Image (tube, rainbow, N blue to C red; front, side):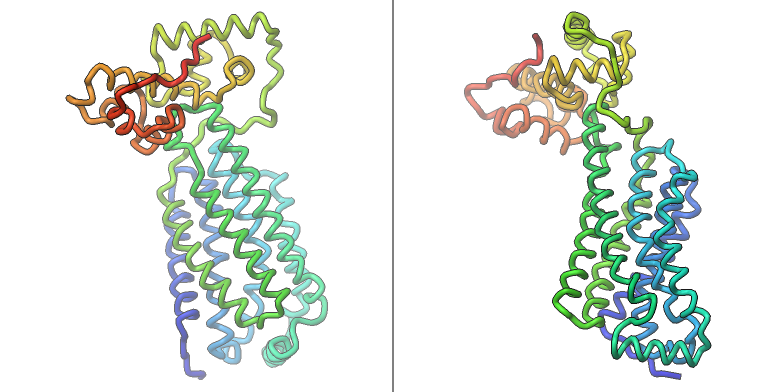
Length: 378
């Protein structure tokens, strides 16, 4: 039995693997947002298998349990597809895995097929293969397929980032409060996974040793496991409608109808003040106007030159400005004024206020000349 000696990299990998398995178990039992949580549980499990592989090889356990040799290899082909599918499921609770989703399993399946001759080896043959690969690099059929895992990882990271950017634009066209619907954290996660793939490619091109490449991947992936697991565990079901395939469906609006809808929109916003509802959405406002989200979105972009998010928050910012000018900021906290105007969080209020006025709320309150934010009225 080999003596198990762990350095800090291997210890981080083991802790990350254990943490990933625990989080995967918790996520798999969650009833809310089941598709997203189960995909994330599967992703964390594959992470954990990969992380555990480093200590397995470097400690010499392969010579005691050789039949586990290369079981981690297909997981490298699963990271990209699972991150992408998780992004789809997390951004749209109506999305489900279907037959079309099976296309994302083709590359991992091919990778497994190429490894079947390796898995069929006897224990001593696997040990000999491990020692040969350690000394001279991967050979045989796996050597032809192995570099493609980097292409897959980078391509899926790029696809995930593009999807999330598109999702962010859709959210701003449909919601006035982004606190419960934005996936900025997942965009950072997808960018981090893309960075990991690029780092490994650079190390490979620089002819860094396999041990160094594995060490960098293990440490960075351990950090990712902690981050994605805990954030994903707290992530609510965030969006009630799927992303449209096109920016606008054919609305059939001519210029005269668009102007009429714009006038009706401004009238409702000023008379009924629906912007004070913190969870106001494009669909709710369109229903109030007797129109459709597609038509209203078209009017906002073509007639107003704004997203729904900026349009609504412009009214909210001006209301806060009005109350500051009226002296209400001396009697109430600034965030209380923001909540009365329809903002749901301090960060959203501060960001929107600065975007519309180029000032912070406190700076505006101290300013002797207090011009209101630009009006959206025609």
